[in-house]
Image (tube, rainbow, N blue to C red):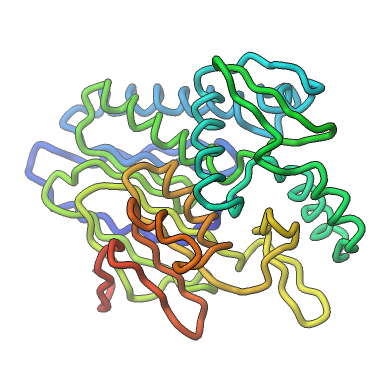
Length: 319
């Protein structure tokens, strides 16, 4: 799960009729917070409830924690064609395209590796080379086929893990629900993954955190868009002087050991969510094509690397 890497500071100097209304629901393992600017409190509440219902629907399709979820049924489909809902097909299709573009740095078939490293963090024991190799054999984005809104897993014991993309998709879909219910100005925050429509008076001010999860005095100002951050400061395993992240390089099967925070600014939350994971594994030089549609900022403690499309970062006292 992505870490809470951003702190959003929202300015309430809106014109007299628009008021901020806040709603929170615990879903997909984190708090989804919806802020709506509206003249009508009842309208805002109804819209937020419908948005939360949509998130629940997506979680039932995409969660690998729910035993009877659609994605778990796909993982258990025994190399046969499996019919997909529109939600799961959309997420799989986007994910496989990103896997190709990132040369495997993003890979939703890494479920066996994810489970192996979850167990390692719990047991405080690094997996052996043999364990890693065995689980790598069960992974690989080229081992899944999509056709006519169906999917087939081509190898035994595969496990799909949508943890790096499903939350972003849920945020996008929830925002669509708000718009269909006459909400023009809103922000959705899911544990630091943010999506914003146009601010009612100007721009959203968002404070960034450093690689140790501490809020500092750096901030960006944006009119609208999505922002996601990935890092390892909370979910990790410390062993023999090294810190092993919960983020895995799907190409090697090994947990990352660099302590860094990757922030991505993109048009949609699904893009920002997935690309933040991708650039935790990649660097700017490895895949410049992905930088065309997003802005990236990487803080590794010793230096900060920022692409030209990332919003300007300001420093100063908190507003």
